[in-house]
Image (cartoon, rainbow, N blue to C red; front, top):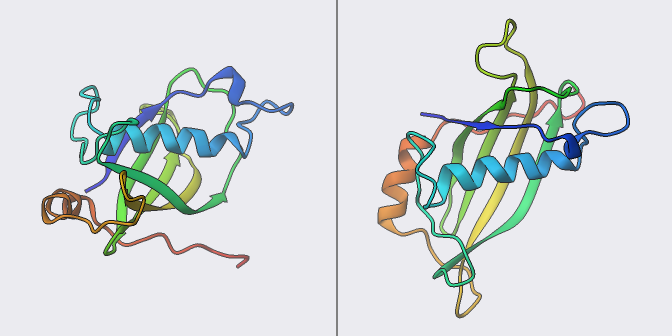
Length: 155
């Protein structure tokens, strides 16, 4: 199952060409990830809400790696992008979060703009050492597991 997270494109996300800047894409993906997997956002139906954010959280989620494949420039849109998110893999202390960024829900033509992956490592906030995914977290996250993205890589 995939989460569908609506994320608006802000004016400040655009570059001189009137498209979402490539570096700003990381911020849009972060917004989707936080709304989908962190507790405290009850506005997104079906969110996993597995982790607690903030400086006083027991676990920090750190980014180990990100990969983005830009398929088409994203123009400024009044309606939010539809960011589909799922888990490609659950490791011992890490998660592979996968994304597909689509045109807004209800658009005349559904367009896939970007595909991306973020590897997140769970870290104990006291020891600052990686910590294992708990069985409870794994049970929730398993509802969102689908095959990971197979990138074109110059094909």
